[in-house]
Length: 262
Image (cartoon, rainbow, N blue to C red; front, side, top):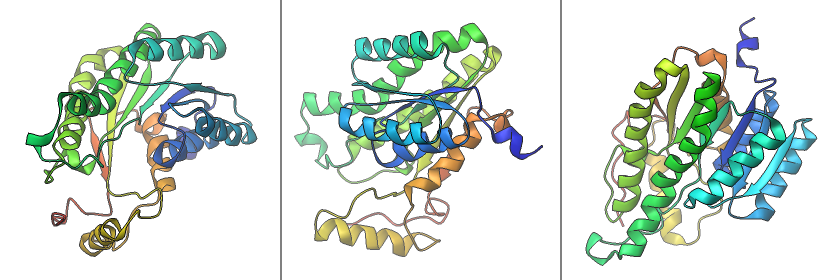
């Protein structure tokens, strides 16, 4: 009985940024729990690979190349989902980026600022707005936004990323209040450091070792560890949870994780 509450049979989910890393891990977890999953990202080859793995799990899937900073592309992706799969129940707003743009605020251009904010925050808004009209119409659904530990704390030269991910947290809380009466739950996952590739250089490797040192569990996250949390928030097992931000970081924020030093 308890485990049945975690099942997603008959549900349709959209996962943005699902071509690799955390997005792919969450998309596969939803499929394993029974959901049909639409995967989107800008890189078509990557989402095709994710879609093939979902099909092997026996689920229906669509791979739709989408730039979440374009409301037209987002609207088209959602309409394709409805026309092919009939409905939408779950949205995971995972597409994002920009942490690598570590520049002092006085050196940032207008274009860099807008790209970072649009990718992490405006894209979340575009996708939620496009899916939301269907969720409101059916009076049910779960929206899961992906923020970051950097949404809670400052970082030298990370002003775009910290600002946009902090915005995602407040977007989550405000929308949860707005849609509670519509029986739509809106929650947020804030991952810590979950490397999805080898370090590019010695500096990046040193930062990861430093992060392990100051993380209470003494290791970094593995992408597949986000899957069960995403399934929980998408399923009836979390039916009384909305407006919450769940941090999954090995205890780093709780333990006062030390700032990274360049």
